[in-house]
Length: 130
Image (tube, rainbow, N blue to C red; front, side):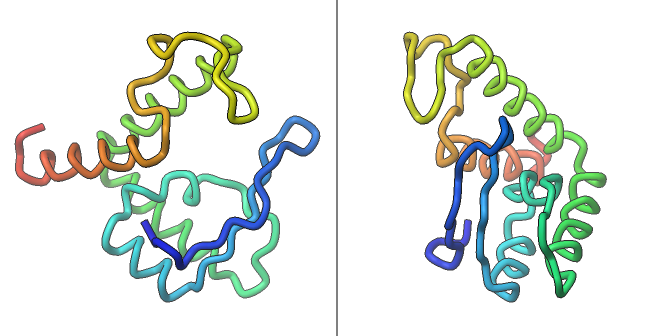
């Protein structure tokens, strides 16, 4: 989602917490969230460190409304987060490096895989197929 519009300037652990600093022009973010709101769980429930104009809070509120209204999508995210957490706690993945065989990884470990999986599942839900 977003293509070249979003810029990730920082992605590292600070005192055991992953910190990401992202810049995304608000009109483009709003458009992406309208088009594919199911991709924005991490933004919706992430902790915003600075939001002087209140734009991030607005986008988070819109995301919460979406996920509150779509519990099956929320469940997909929660399952994915738990699988990735399990992989990391098992010592399989750390700092961008895999340490064990791929059969121990979640089905959609990489963001691109999970995003495509979400797109397909949401499309099927919208079509009434699951």
